[in-house]
Length: 414
Image 1 (cartoon, one colour):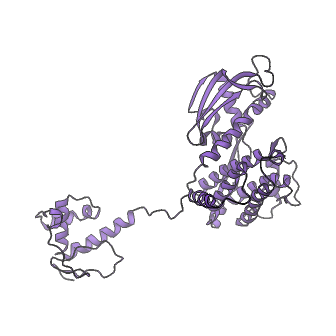
Image 2 (cartoon, rainbow, N blue to C red):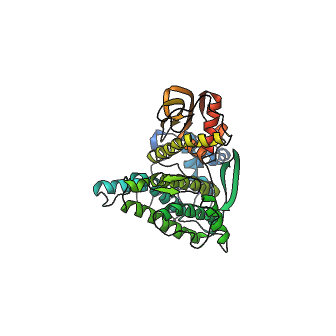
Image 3 (tube, one colour):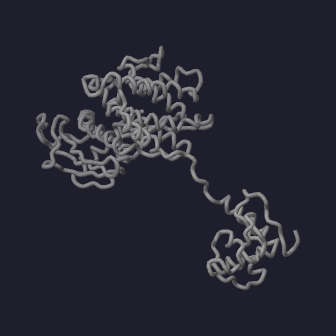
């Protein structure tokens, strides 16, 4: 290459191409138009040092049209500047953020809905189990390409106990083991195998079962835990689908040690925890993770709202909530209520009876109003948000608001 002339690169992958010298011919055989003729832009007449100083701006497409035309005309005549321009353009290409190769998380749902519109399933998944089916599938997709480093990434489980923030350190694999052992409570109720096998827990609570599983393992959990967790989640969905949905089977109690939930609520509870811990895992590996669909998020919020009156009563008996200001309200009668307004996806309004779980929420007896985002409320119920900082808006009886927010946080557990 000599000053004043250069040969074009043959490698088509080294784009963008630098303009060829005037009157040269492209590979297509068509002559290039004269500089200054394109778009009616007449190049400026500039000195070589000025043109050289413009190369960086030209590579970033930040030149004025007249300057860009002058630079491009100069590149057809100066080999040194052409080389420099090519290097700058390649550097700019390296600075650009590559487009994500990950599939849209909503793609699976759209494909399934399209398929089911054409051919409904012979045995459909009950509506109350759909959230669990969706959340386990989303978490499984997140885990699919994890390497050893990701499986052993540290994760800190968080929840509230006696109004104090509590944590437990584990790994991504440890979280999946935790989900599998607690899902096992539902599995055993349905007559399926218990993932604990011969391991005995001190108490049949989620925390005791998890600790027993972790202690019994000869080594910390690894990627091998994914296969049994995945198989168990499929078996749960398959079993509740075959045994029917809305009849007495859906109301069958599932014991959690200290309390019970009907099967349809237990499946929703497991969907909620699957999402919450999937977010824990995604945070640990620095990966984005979206909340559930609005339809499923609404059901999760509804479950928490329905549990709040009972939790309030238990906290009041333990001295953790303010006492009732007047006599207990008779079952089914209206009483003091807090309006819980959930905004955004999965939103709605719930009237939470404050004085008795048997009372009826009443707009006429509303003493406080709290507004939260749907996902934020669920994170509060998971113990991931400080309760007294959670509400986006609050009006009315401050003590009632405090009691309800702390009760929501106390729904959390390991």
